Image (cartoon, rainbow, N blue to C red):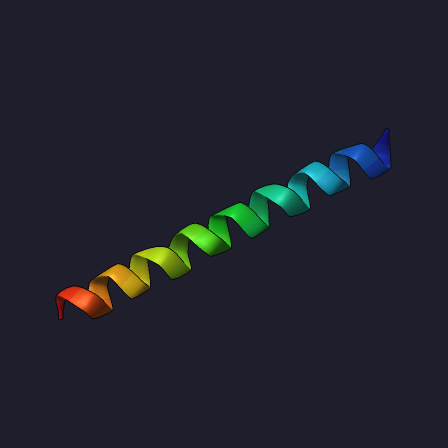
Amino acid sequence: MIVCCVHHLSLKKLYRLGWVLGEIQALGRRG
């Protein structure tokens, strides 16, 4: 159970990191 929770949290962090990187790239293209 604990491993499942940790894995889920790490996936959320990775998703969030990818989203942030995508936003930065979009801003770079606009600028």
